[in-house]
Image (cartoon, rainbow, N blue to C red; front, side, top):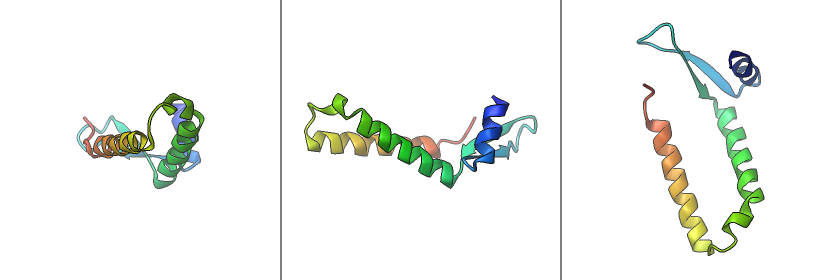
Length: 81
């Protein structure tokens, strides 16, 4: 796992953050660049998987997208354990 995170850090996609409570721990979070890459990848995945949503109306797809954005934003606000 460390090697993978090292590679992501070298690419500027993640950053390591020391835990303030337990100095043995290091948190990993996406950088702005990492979030942009994630967003692009997610967009490509959604486009690729559009067949899954072929039976949904545009309004239903928009509603689903809005709800998923809300969930993602809330997940980003949850403090790490």
